[in-house]
Image (cartoon, rainbow, N blue to C red; front, side, top):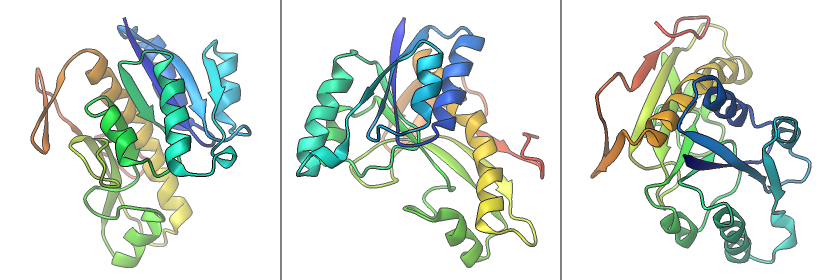
Length: 216
């Protein structure tokens, strides 16, 4: 039985999607803990209500990013996780922290990487005039919003979209591909080959969504 630790900073809707899928689909894993850098993160209430242990490591109590990451890593490691899942964890992590979890930490980013890294991805997409936007699940590397891609989902950009409308459409498909990617990991089906992720046995690592945000 593999153990998953999920890091959040806010609502934690992707954390909810992963935790619910783990139970519903009877994965060979369990969510051992949800950890937040913000004591007021709304997602902590969901975790507690569902019997998942929670911890808070408040980044505001530390003088440096390195000091915060050291205590965060110590807290994570106390649960002996096989996988660390970043689910809206709004902190830039130090290289030492990322390297400590190399090959066992994944993130979901709201764009079709390598396009639009960083913040305000939906406005970036609108400003660029792209017709397709989306989300990517990737292994975390020291380069921000970079790393071998596990899965991607594409959504249409509609006439009249603003950043909020596009964000909602993308979030709906994040809730589909992120649990799927985590399940592949805990089932031992993912391998990193250079910059590529190999899924065995193969199945589609992409999702094309219709206007309603449902896969087609």
